[in-house]
Length: 234
Image (cartoon, rainbow, N blue to C red; front, side, top):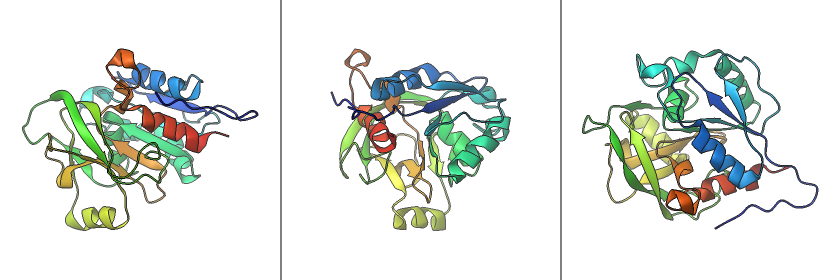
């Protein structure tokens, strides 16, 4: 297992997890972040309007506000999202997984949208992801072309965008992850994760945080969190 080793005098990464009504993956995410950094993340309630000093903000999975209207649509207008946008604007790092990815697109912090899966049913299964680049904080734990297993649990994971947006994502190297082998939800160009122009905001559909310990069935997702910690450690 890869483990992050901080040098003497370095501080642990300060991370925070945003919790909305209906969020249900915050504990899984906290386990992953603490395992990588040695420091428990702060839990941030959606009604807060300011963030404490942080290096990383994570929007975890679940069904924020019951997924009424569209998945992530109501959460995108929560009071805390103004602070999250400002944090990203100052160069802070933001990760959104599953429902968190949906929220980031609804908040227009990432392009595109997540629609109903092509088969029109909820998917709960493992998938295989391919890493498209290895030089970002979110992908530095892998090499380009590496593949890894990740659990998926979503009904609205079908990534869509217009052709110009897709071409721009490809041309700017902002596709972080793709589905490998098969495309379980019908996402355009098999896209599973995308990056912002600054490369400091990332949305990922499958749950890498659910495979960070042998007791979970594997450590395939651990490089995501070890890589983030390595990039952000003081």
